Amino acid sequence: MRRLANFGAALSLLSLGSAGCGDNNEAGGVITFAKFDMLADFEGSLSLNMSDRWNGAFIPSADKSDMAVQIVEQKELPPALINPSLPESKAALHATDDGKHTMWGTAWLAVFQSNKSAVDFSEYTGITLWARSDGLPVPTIKVAIADWGSYSDTIDPNTKKAYCDMNDSTVGGRGCYDDYSLKIYPDGAWRRYDIPFSQLTTGGYGLLHAFDPKRLYALKFAMLPAVAYSVWIDDIALYRKQ
Image 1 (cartoon, rainbow, N blue to C red):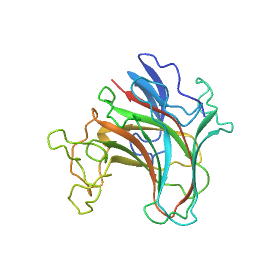
Image 2: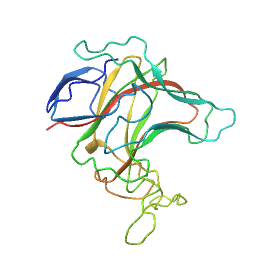
Image 3: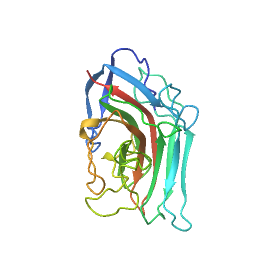
């Protein structure tokens, strides 16, 4: 893959995949980003790129199924040249699972701040990333952002209690982890997915709340249970189109 580069005031790139969907893999037109900041390019590690606004790193997460194996690592890329005008990316996040996690499944996620405080991404309109998978069937990846209403460690300053309740599993209750999200479906080719915040929705099973880009806590990639996969993620960035 080739790393996104030249982060000027405006950046024109070829849009691959349907914005916010990922199930349309035809090449799109040229999109101009008015603002573009790299969140994670995975060239050195699974950590987010150095910034005074975020300092987290991607870690694996999985249910407690016996004898199941999930691996999330920073790994050198085989040759995968996507756009000759951009510098080559030498590494990416590689996530694999043997399909034996049969309870809630698996995920990999990065908390934006190691002290679990919120970050303000209101100056951006979305997240862009590159993804591909090895082999068939094409996997379903849930790309989610944990905000004030779904992140389990947020506290209401008025009540001094958590906004959501990890022990509430009732529909329409105050349950946690109902993140704003959408799904992408990467195949065997590197493709870019532009994900506007405006297209994110919740599953409707947790605390009912409005998405607030000023109070974001983590970025998650989640997989269904009992699914074997080999997935690559690279060049996760924040953007504003205008």
